[in-house]
Amino acid sequence: MIHTKKISFPDMHGALGHLTPIEGNVDIPFPIRRVYYITRVPGQAVRGFHSHRRLEQVLICLHGRVKIRVKTPFAEQIIPLCDPAEGLYIGHMIWREMFDFSEDAVLMVLASEHYSEADYIRDYAAYEKEAVPYFQTLSEGGA
Ligand code: T46
Image 1 (cartoon, rainbow, N blue to C red):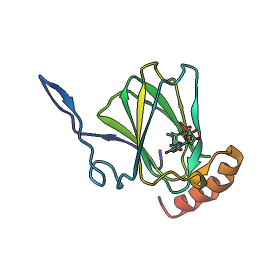
Image 2: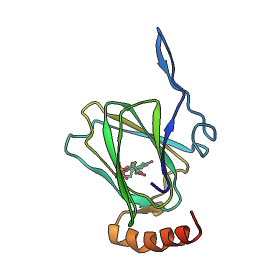
Image 3: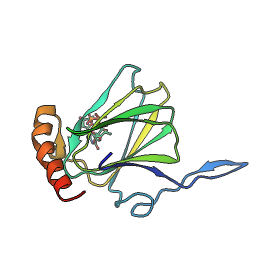
């Protein structure tokens, strides 16, 4: 889907276990300005329900399992994450919801910007109003 992609990270493994190195601007397409992680999410909880105008992120499920719904006014996809050597890149103006967290899930997020509440669009109607012309202009430009 537009502005989303799975990224595979190196997995250095052997008799002593696994090591996954991740470098900003190398393994992910931006310099990392912020890291946060989501843990101990109750089974039925659904998080997210927002989009970002400028922020780009890579979501990595370090432990356990979680599903990510990514959505625009024109398309929708559900992407399961359970491999610590794999990330989900989410770019500009993608609506996201995170659900089906396993009890032991640890979802780490690498972000391109410091936290800014002003960058969030948390109301779906407001999101559609901005996202429809945004994606229409992109597709007219051949993106
Ligand atoms: C996203 C998904 C994947 C901060 O103070 N600093 C931070 O860096 C973040 C990320 C959040 N917060 C505060 C804002 C709220 O008061 O922590 C509280 C919970 O945040 P929120 O409800 O936005 O959490 P999620 O899980 O719905 O969304 C988060 C990110 O906010 C968002 O950017 O893409 O994870």
